[in-house]
Image (cartoon, rainbow, N blue to C red; front, top):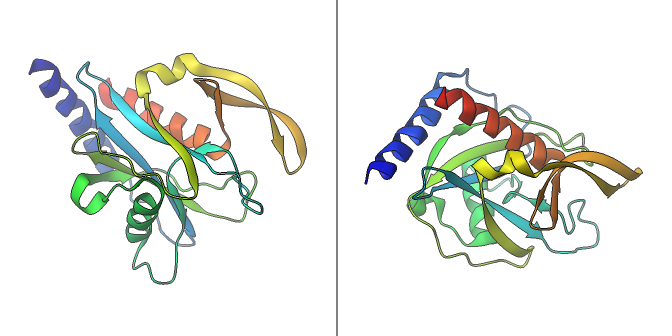
Length: 195
């Protein structure tokens, strides 16, 4: 029980830190990603990552990333888009199973520098049953505390040719680019909220 109380306070500190930051503007945001966190019993947090399916024309084909996608005209807000995309890709209903903690700085993926993406952080109430959609091959949880030890340089293929990049190497999978950058921002916030 003590671990759970400590973890809840860690999430609460993260929420307070996120709410104390100036709000990010949704102006020009065209896509969203969901950073879905669950509590572990060992006083740590896990985040859900996914491997995208190989698809012709998809700039993230086969990549490891976060659930998300483009905002459609039918979405009332970036939050609605995130809920829809998370449901489509991993079968989690954020309206019932999650709680918005805040957002990170919008960014631009290297392979689509014109696309402004808003990362949204959600706390899930419990470990959900995942229902993988057609755009995704698999989804898996990674402990945030383990990510710093998984940093390495990796060789990747980009539309500009081969490149060596900073990455996390997670169970034989390379996490790089935009996902690597927002995970680093989350780790930095987590560290600030703990100290």
